[in-house]
Length: 68
Image 1 (cartoon, rainbow, N blue to C red):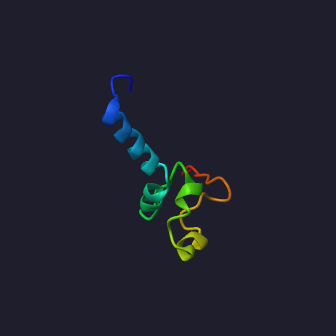
Image 2 (cartoon, rainbow, N blue to C red):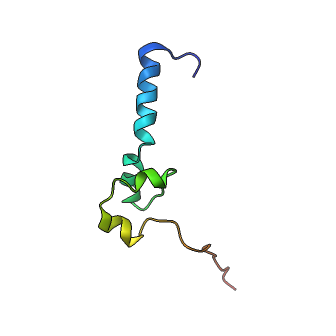
């Protein structure tokens, strides 16, 4: 955003740093969504939530079968 400078640019970087810090990813993971930074997000759920693996990527590809 070339047109942004000063305090607005600082606010933008503060927001982006917070957004990618992991809290946001952990928050949306609790609703079943995935984070673009899972390594950061895993710092926010408690160990029990992380260890269950309910929000981690599948170990193998999920393939859908067409109805025949």
